[in-house]
Image 1 (tube, helix red, strand yellow):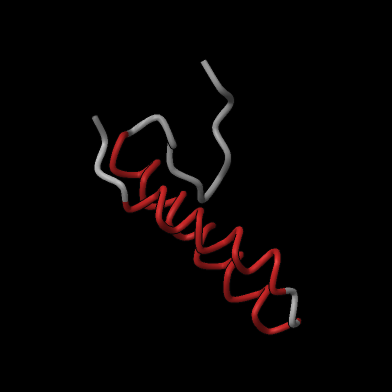
Image 2 (tube, helix red, strand yellow):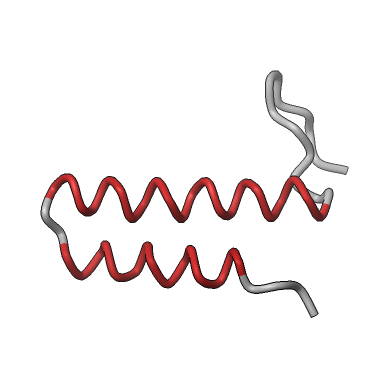
Length: 56
């Protein structure tokens, strides 16, 4: 069992994991846009699309 981290939730929960992935994807796209890294921004957009794709 993974060690607990104060202030963090267990990402094994399906809904929590999806929300964390979406948060990370949006952060990636926004940061890349702010620094002008178009290639990394596109990667962030792909991450967003994958995070929003409904699970099988």
